[in-house]
Amino acid sequence: MIKVEDVHKSFGSEKILKGITTEFDKGKTNLIIGQSGSGKTVLLKCLIGLFKPEKGKIFYGENAIQDMDDEQQRKLREEIGMLFQGGALFDSMTIEENVMFPLRMFTKQKKTDMVARVNEVLKRVNLENANDKYPAEISGGMQKRVSIARAIVNKPKFLFCDEPNSGLDPKTATLIDTLIQEITHEYNITTVVVTHDMNSVMEIGEKVVLLKDGKLVWQGTNQDIFKTDNEDATNFVYSSDLFKKIREVQLKEK
Image 1 (cartoon, rainbow, N blue to C red):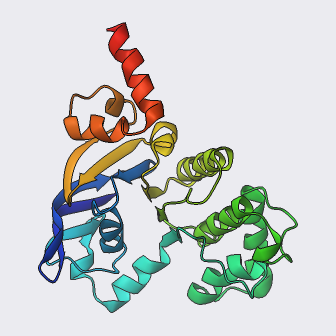
Image 2: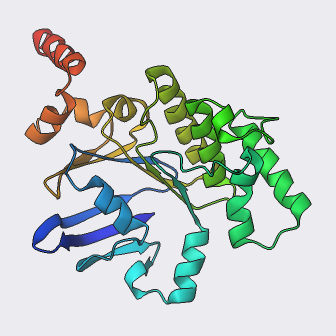
């Protein structure tokens, strides 16, 4: 579990996060949603330690990042997997080399053991026998699956995903959502996904945190968000034409 307590973050005179308090549950897909500029990415970067809040604390278990020494922070980084928005694969490396990269960085395993682990996670994301290909030789959806394999190769306790469906067609996006949720449950990971995609909320939003103008304005499950009377939540959910039509049908049925 990750606990966020009264986190504030500013850049110069501009306040981005204005007292965020919430929890991200272990073994669940926790989604941070909101319009562009709501503070989603800044909160994510605070969670993984790239930004330091001016006020408030972020706890991994019982330990606050702000109170950790260098060695404790290093160990925490080893327990974190990261799925970047663009995939962030190394073009000059093969798929095997890309997935193996965290093992080379954080472990002292033998090459044979590393290859075995790479093959294990590639199989899990349905990319067996893709080891010798390069990122440019596979589709965007396959690249995203490679990125997931790399994110979990070191058996992380925490998985962070920044707009994992960016640039994908709807069918592939759903496959990626499902894969993230399956892996979260299988490995009992605390997974945090930053997204603005309502389809992702519907598919995998076991815990949903809605930000607006740097404040947490609503939180609950993907079932709760369609039943709430919270104006900020309903405005976000029904901002697209599809969900406006769904809302119209719901209101007619009442």
